Length: 259
Ligand code: COA
Image (tube, rainbow, N blue to C red; front, side, top):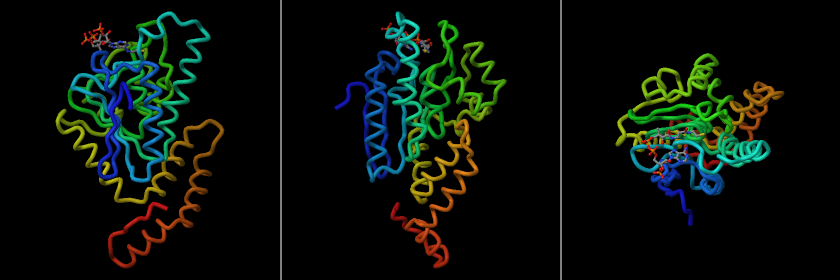
C-alpha cells in the first residue's frame, strides 16, 4: 500500500516505520505524503490507542528532508515546501489526539529531528545522534525546528545546536530533556511498547484533552489555562470519567470505554 513506510497494528499500538534505508530514511515528498496518510488512518482507527514512529534499520531514524529534491528550489518553492510540510506532517502529528511516541533509532537530523520533536515525546537508542544541520546547507530548519527545539531544550541550547549545525548524542539529548529515555537498540521498540501499555490503561478521551490543553499553551494568542478549564469541564460529561471515578470508589481497575 505504501512505498516508503511500513505500518503494523498490534494490541492497540500502530507502529509506523519509515523505510527508505538506502537514503537513511530521508523524507522526500512521497514519504511525507505517505506519513500523513498513515498518521491520519491510525488516528481515526478506534483500535489504535498509541502511535509509535520509528525508522527502519539500526543507523537512522531520519537523516533529514531529502536534499536532492529541493536543491534547485526558488524562494517561493522553498516557502511552500515548509508551509505544506508543516501543515500535513509536523503540525498534523503534534496536534493528533492519539499519543505519538518517537522511537529514535539512529540519526535524527534536520527534518528527522523535527519529526521526532513533533511527536508528543521521544525515546532514543544509545547510538542515536540528533541535530539540526540546516545552516550548514545555507538554509534554516523549516519544519518547526526553530520553534520546537527551544521549547524542548531551552533557547540557549537550541541557539547553539542550530548555529553550530552540530550533533548531540543520546546521553546529551537525555540531559537536555530532548528525549525522555535512552536504551539499547534492541530494547527501543519494547520500551516504546511498554510506555504505550502504560498510556493505554488510562482514558483516551482524557489523554486527548490533555494533549490539546498542553499544546494550546504554545499557540500564540491562545490561553492554555482557558483551554484547560474547558477541557477539564468537558471530561465530566464523558463515559470515561464516570467509569474512572466509579472504579476508584469501588476499588477496582477502570475499564474505559474511550468515550
Ligand atoms: N537527503 C538525501 N539523501 C540523503 C540524506 C538527505 N538528508 N541523508 C543521507 N542521504 C543519502 C546519501 O546521499 C547516500 O545516498 P547515496 O548512497 O545514493 O549516495 C545515503 O543516504 C547514505 O548516506 P551517506 O552520507 O553515504 O552515509 P554516511 O554514513 O556517510 O553519513 C550522515 C551519514 C547522516 C552523516 C550523512 O548522510 C548526512 O550528513 N546526511 C545529511 C544530513 C542533513 O544535512 N540533513 C538535514 C537536511 S535539511
